[in-house]
Amino acid sequence: MSRGLTQNGKPATQSDLAELVTDTMTPAPTPSSVAIVVVAAGRGSRAGEGLPKQYRTLAGEPIITHALRALHAGAPQARMLVTIHPDDRALYDAAVARLNPAAQQALLEPVAGGATRQASVKAGLEALAGVAPDLVLIHDCARPFASPALIARAIAAAQTHGAAVPGLAVTDTIKQVDAGGRIESTPPRASLRAVQTPQAFRYALIATAHKLAASTGQMELTDDGAVAEWAGHAVHVFEGDAANMKVTNPEDFAAAEARMMGQLLDIRTGQGFDVHAFTEGDQIWLGGVSIPHTRGLLGHSDADVLMHAVTDAIYGALADGDIGAHFPPSDPQWKGAPSDIFLRHAAQRVRERGGMIAHVDGTVICEAPKVGPHRDAIRAKLAQIMGVDVSRVAVKATTSEQLGFTGRREGVAAMALATVRLPS
Image (cartoon, rainbow, N blue to C red):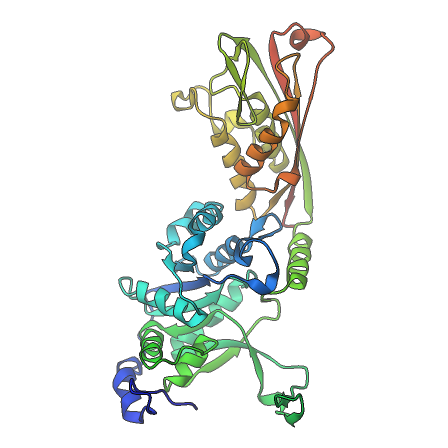
């Protein structure tokens, strides 16, 4: 076991360590509270160019959203605190907005992480001081597949042992090599474990250990189990989960995407149709975009005929009623309401069921105004509201060859199809 260093750089004695950690060695009471620190401040450079990896999408949603959803499902009683890069607040806010209300309620205000993982964890632990949980789990957000069973084992191990990490038996032969690549030793596999997260601790124990490590300049420890071990604590290894993969390289993204899509095998299609008559006005709303016109559209809300059709198509794919069932026109609060409220709700219903919107195809039917010049803006707006990539949204327009009410320029109609994938 390695030893800490005092502030003057000399090796810390056993009494030095004991002075700082004695109060964390007493048996833990039955835990009344659990918190989870989620580390998400890194840049993820090994994942390639683009957004930091925690905000890149898998099956249509950011990795961090998947990770937080999994943690909340496994420990709904726990408060969650995320350490983020100071430049990523807008990305973070957009990602957590996709969580259900209960998961959002479990989130504490995020804190800025540090230059290293260890510094980020320390910042998160310090931010939990006001909560003072009995136990804390520390999890890398690049692991979006943490199962409820794994989380339950972590909590139980922390309660029993005070410091515990999930580990997997090593199946490959491991070689220790020198700088030139020559083998120096072959450790026996039976004693080796590949360590994962969430790692689990009594809060006072790990918070004190991180404080001690930082105060002595020991900031290159690669996981929290190592921090606890360095500070003089025995660290237990409990059963990990082979499915709890870490997404690091482009190849990992491909594997994780395939795995998530493979879990969404219940593929459904819904259709929507809506009509609104022209009235006095100088613009109409189509897909969340204001289009200048000689007339407006008449409706209880903002009469966005395309967005209404898309919304009903999503509800239809879920067999979840229609706009009128969720937002009754008899309710005055929806009079003049922007239709993005309805579409956001429909998209959230998909996410609450663990699914994704795979594709939306909308068609506007009218003689005027011309939709083509606004097509890309409409696609982008619909994609943003639903929280999907714009490549999953198609918008078309046609006339009715001057036939029917649209041909007589009495109103606008819209049709939409939505393909939704749900867990099988």
